[in-house]
Amino acid sequence: MELARLLFADFDPSVRHIVAQPFLVKALVEGAVRRHVPDYLLLTEAGPLVVDVKPLRRLDQPEVAFTLGWSRHLAEDRGWRYEVWSEPPVALLENVRFLAGYRRNWLFPRELLDALDPVDLDGLTLGEALRRPAGVAREYARAGIFHLLWAGRLTTDLRQPLSASHVLRSVA
Image (cartoon, rainbow, N blue to C red; front, side, top):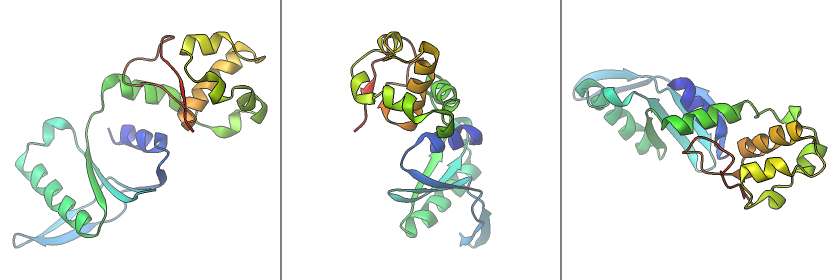
């Protein structure tokens, strides 16, 4: 689950830097010294975000809820945001995992991405976009479109399994 959260952080264009297990928090809470290492510190456009990853089934356990509660309090006292991240919807996770295969900028020639201008693809379904590759071989167009989705230059509803009927939107 931590790897999934890392993948989502990598997919989020507002995340500028990711630090795994960034620090040890040690605090006196209810008369006892408590220790906790958050899973991630994400440096985002909106400021630091401390992330703890826990399965949904464990969130109601008293010790887990207690630790997450005082961790949240300490992070927010610093003016940082805090998040407890659990299992994402299955289709969303699978789509982000799939698109991650297209994340490496250096694999996509500038000419290919220029030929696949997101503005020209705005409003088309994924199937339509793949059928009119603007002078680019279909297999390259497919990879380029998925890269534009990963890079956030195109968007679509990723909560449902990707299909030819997904409508693409250009991101300004």
